Length: 87
Image (cartoon, rainbow, N blue to C red; front, side, top):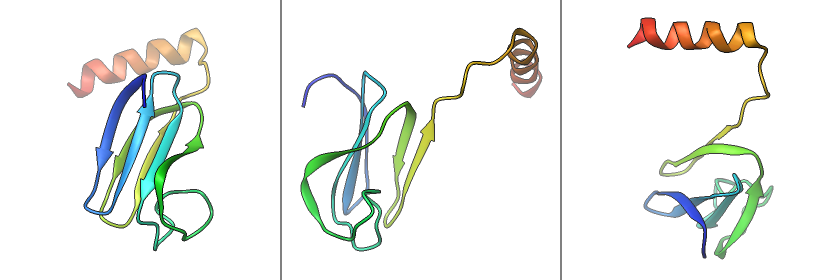
């Protein structure tokens, strides 16, 4: 697979984030952790979701953080101030 931005792997499954903000998953799926709506294991990476910022694989679960919608200038400034305060 080319264009990989990041990978997160657990003991049973892996999540892949490509440069185009698309997420893929493969491996064991007994608890639906691949996110394809089934419990079928798959050794070939399946595209799961678009517009994804980051992925994290746990033992029997997956976390996917979606990209935020564009914010207004005021919201962007407020977020920047909050980040500075929380550092």
